[in-house]
Image 1 (tube, rainbow, N blue to C red):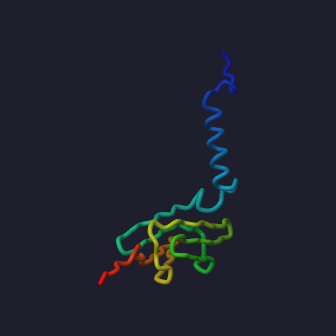
Image 2: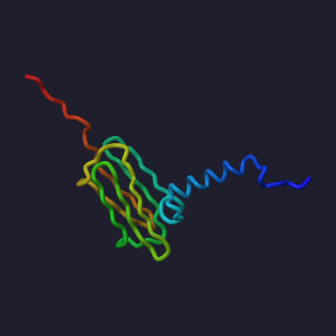
Length: 121
């Protein structure tokens, strides 16, 4: 008996997954969604982000932070990276330190206290 692809019960599921992935990446296969690995570490008093940016020159990296989200923009001859990374805690954006070695970007921030204690007199 010849198999008819129209009768494949998984065909519609895989099609839906592909459609959703395309929507999430905007149909674009460049940038963080496809080839870049990003890790965010909550290290007690600090937050550290590590991102792989292969083929990018240090001068092509642009970082912006509003205390809650880090935006990483970078470009190489082959691809562009543009990602907004929600940080796990509020940070002091002015405390940022960044390094870039062998295609690996590391950014470290000091955390901001969630609330201040108020003494009642």
